[in-house]
Length: 221
Image 1 (cartoon, rainbow, N blue to C red):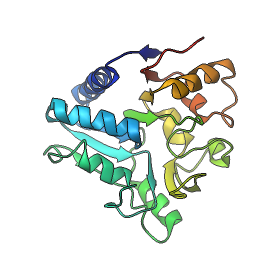
Image 2: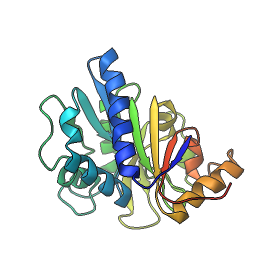
Image 3: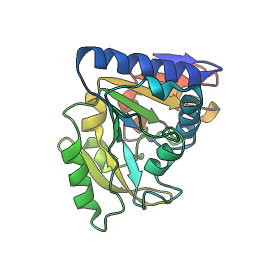
């Protein structure tokens, strides 16, 4: 499913709220996995400014990937979320579980975070890169075919090079997935992904073709 919309942040924040509410109506706790990047920053600021976060209850926030930097570093996804989405604080009934990616033993940090994850993520938020990557799973990565580990230490093609990321084990098992693909180049990723959906090595975004995609630019089928 895809949405091409002018006010993508408003529709996506509404969709997140609906998805979270559906989960918390059936059980006491909802797991939401956040992403980083410029699109996420725009969404998080919009959500904070609209006061949507005040309507969240019983939510445990996780991260799909993190750069191996301290939490107060400008490149930290956790830091981004705290400066934008949680700028007024984390709601009392919610919790933010960050990746300790600054740990000197990144493999141990990945294993530690994996141990904190629930069996299945209820709501997964992703942003696709112009190269088709999602989380920190880049084209050509051997971890695109990981079938056992849920969080791994990876090397990215651009700085910060060292990162932790969830694997397809987490992504493909998530209950509800939203993908941001903003701008013409990212919209074209969706178009390309549809043409050869089996080749995830070339375009990791093909892992989530059946997710709900949010675009702000038209594309050709």
